[in-house]
Length: 446
Image (cartoon, rainbow, N blue to C red; front, side, top):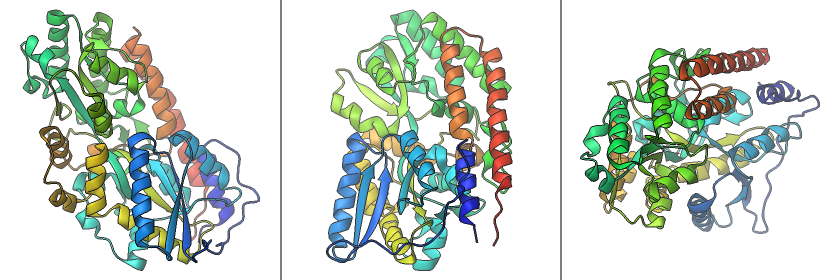
């Protein structure tokens, strides 16, 4: 068993907070509504189109399970705010039955000790076939041969391309197959048209993609997906530094647009013709469609430099919280999780938002997709399945990404790429050391 005090110490220690002295473990009896249905609390961070899709999903599920299960979603702010509340609540035991966490928190949630792996829930209650998941999605959430979370709203970075600007510059999307071609073509666009070749938000997720486009694992060994914890980051490696050295020159010349960390600013630069390419999340497809661009545009996969290279999934997943919840609640939570992962729900989510379907069977439901949606699905299914595209799994990743964001901003504003990334990698490695030391202090008894 996992002692509650030890569980709390790991969760709070990993978040660099105080230990969880006084935390008590116990399975509270299930809450019931006025109809006698088991209530399943769900904390989430989905806003906008994704929030509306989640609300619709929950309403349909509750209607189908009236009198048996009621899922109650509670918006907890952005992912960072929601996770901070989750960590703080470990001390009191006042935790939701279901927690929506973004991809960055995957290893942290796994290590927390307060969750039940979905593979275990499926063994208990059945009803789901993990072999039906899209292989590149399963690749991300399967760690040490175990599925821990139910992939819910999955995204990948894609290139949104202004076809008119490319044509004016004498280019087409085939000129962006590799990162070297992206750099060279961006220079040509700037020389010919005086606008930036590309823009993307200086979010830490795109540092992950910088490594994966080059076929490099962001952290080692094996991106932390095996039995050994991740120990070091690769942001100081030659392939990553060389790419950001090229980016440094592009920012300085105006061939790359610097939106800061703001995705809306990056999308705005694309919509107003300041940048010919927006490298952004597929989850933003619905919002882009709603803005009705005044030019011809198309969606294309991210550049790949070799056979190992590809895109790392983003988005979020659902985690079943064991601490403080009895078997009745766990069973009800699993019912909703398996519903979210179903072919029909995933197909509808893709239509409504641009979040990619996690289930292979959802493709049979999608007979009305346009060319841009086909491009997104094409990248998802052509993505190599390996440790590179599994993404970095470390409980220190969220903190390290903030370091990477500061480095990206510094480079975009004229700092030397090699020196900046060397110093930043040392800082990030210190954080991974601290996380691993605290995690190892947690005593787990079978």
